[in-house]
Image 1 (cartoon, rainbow, N blue to C red):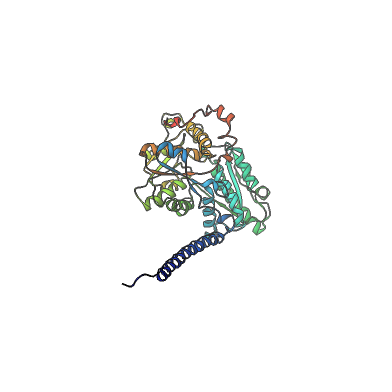
Image 2 (image 1 turned 120 degrees about the vertical axis):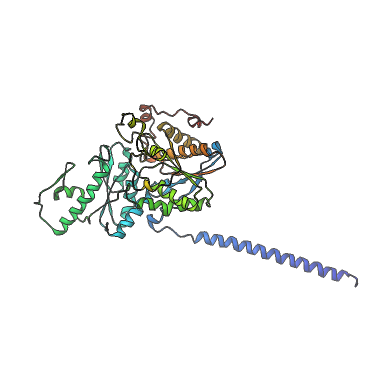
Length: 427
């Protein structure tokens, strides 16, 4: 073997050092380029194309306080972050786009809806983006700020007393008539007929030219009744949007979904999608006081305990929560794939709302609070170690005069007193 000289050793060491520096430079350069590429990708992030493009893809967050208390991962889909402030933005877009595509609605037309508030706000928000207007009929026991928001968005608002859906003057039935009247007005205006025809009396409203002028602009291109309760575009908005987003955001790793129902579109669309992806995912309903859906799901019969005992509630939706609870099966709800149901109380919803503000900084509306009550009840039912998803429909900002008003709650005996989750049996 040839002796190793100082010169050859130095050359070997130099080669090793050079090789090491080259390797280091290669990886540093790759990391630098990777960092630059990431920055470039961030810079390339496209802006949203108008308000419609900003709807959906809402964050799914861990509700820390409820997760820690139950031993389950309780996740909330932050629908209150939609441009119109609620989950109903999705529904408004789906309904309007399908109506325009089918020719039932034209640009310049008026979308009418009977709504307790959120859907109306969403339609009033997105309708102008399609060149349409909005006319809303709202029950007068809904929080006043909801109708104020709708009017501020440029829509017209009718506040009417709440009655049974079978009554001709139920807010939904009036909204349906308004769409027909808008079509009649547009036809008369188009034909330039003189105002001399017999006028029909409808709900104290004469469908003659003078009265039409008070509701509809001269350039009105007819009306379209959104019909959120029976229009399956509602369900499709969640089957095609909310459900897939939840599946993607959880990477398919969820055990249960729970939500309350008003129109039934959210719970139906999401449950249908999730159970098609994985039949082992359990889907549940949380039902407020005065609603018959709990009985429908658990017993197959639509009635409340009070009604069965001959003490029918003054208002079928005699609850402080708004937008959820119903005593009939809508076309949307009929499509829901549910494994069970839970009852929630007004007191539980109020306490939950205050608990989440205090512990998580989540300022939620009444239906969102009820959904969180449902999530805890599901966690208690299936035990720790599971992932449960619910919907955070809207924030408390549109519930200031009622659900988030201490004086109003006090008059109903609903002043929150809990310091923790003891109102749900958790110490």
